[in-house]
Length: 219
Image 1: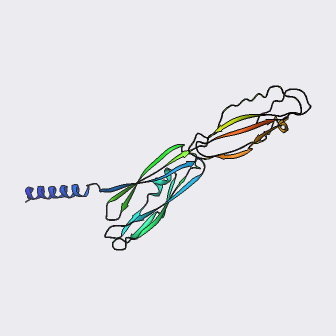
Image 2 (image 1 turned 90 degrees about the vertical axis):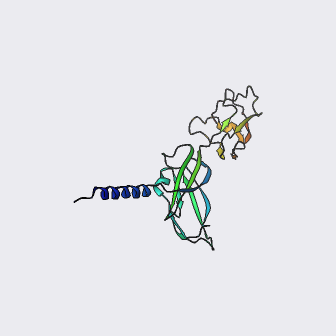
Image 3 (image 1 turned 180 degrees about the vertical axis):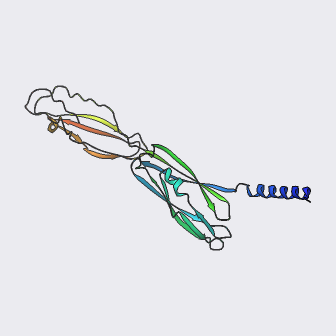
């Protein structure tokens, strides 16, 4: 004879156990690691320390595939039995943002990385960075020196500006084509690096010779 009441009680106990097991793990806290500005096509690394202030050794691993999808890499990717009280040992880790892949966009990047401690709570680490492309603005792109006597020179000042939060390297290069009058023009300085948001006055000098006519040169 089947005891229906007994079967119902077993079913209730089983459902209660499943509910207990399905309870989501607790997120202990959230940390932020901001790698800052990174020039597109380059990489940047930042180091930080993990300290175990708890009573028991800590073991956790990093979701490498999740980080890689955003261009990040963390080393080491596994921490095993990091001692806690009374030693409270620490471990130095590094976070790298590699921006050479085409799939890594320009602009802010942010990833929430859960660090799941074995037999313990979850610690969320927000890793972030800002991918920037250098930019150089010029006060004018057309210089007219007007009429000038042969053997004299004239100087025109152009202002360069770096509007971005990363350094901008620049230099004056002779064009591959259309450089017939290149030798009559000079720039001072011919190269340099503009710090973020910095301005620089560039002097363009024109020194014609006895040859008459118009001098038209792209710099």
